[in-house]
Amino acid sequence: MFLAIDVGNTQSTLGLFDEGGALVRGWRMSTNATDTSDMLHSRLWGYFGKDGLELGSVTDAGVASVVPALERAWRRCLETHLGHDPLVVSPGHDCGMEIAMPNPRQVGADRIANAVAARTTYGAPVIVVDFGTATNIDVVDASGAYRGGAISPGLMLSANALFSRAAKLASIPVEAPEHALGDSTEAALQSGLVIGAAAQAEGLVARIRAELGEPDATVVGTGGLARTVARATDVFDAIDPDLTLRGIREIWLWERARA
Image 1 (cartoon, helix red, strand yellow):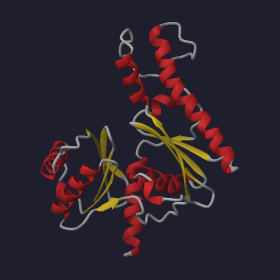
Image 2 (image 1 turned 90 degrees about the vertical axis):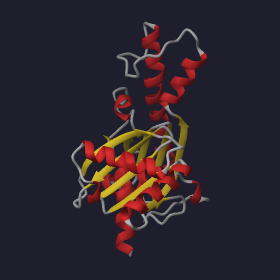
Image 3 (image 1 turned 180 degrees about the vertical axis):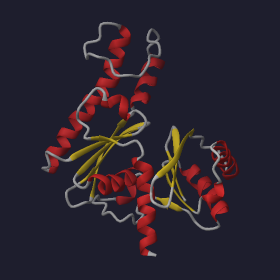
Image 4 (image 1 turned 45 degrees about the vertical axis):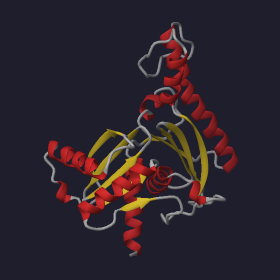
């Protein structure tokens, strides 16, 4: 079995794939940059044991991390368990996709994984909107090359900044309201946060499609809040919460085929 690990700034997502590529089980954990390889190994044992799975069934693994300290800790953890090097997706890594940017090493590992999985699943051109700590937009052009995208503060990052600076605004459920015109403070906040995120996605996608000259480029939403934002817009052709994990596995398959 293959274990894919997507280490984000706030949360990390783990996915266990069987030999046929089906996602058997997934877990989500808080990202803690102080975790050691031993602590991570212990967490893995706990997750697998809780669900009646054998950690020994994992024969290969891959990591895409935006937290350098945890990239090193996961690498050591997985080397100890596997007895060989895991895949580590990194800027400049040969992932089977052309990175058509002046400096390919600037691209985050999660963005590469998203682009690879989106091209494999939905074809090209394709635009991915990933709602995480940051909202990332990643673009694959008609030739199948990664072209770049956009990065903005994530929905929850914006919400937390607002709540911490505005004393009279309490935390609210992050969900899509029925109307953009909020008739209460709670509805107005939900409109600004969720419908605002949807409108931002719509606007950026429209501009990117125009710049690509691809008005019908497929748009895929992913990340923890993708389903919430999708309730406020019809810009998405698909919502795919497991996109990044599948991308890690796709890059591993590419490497294995070349070996």
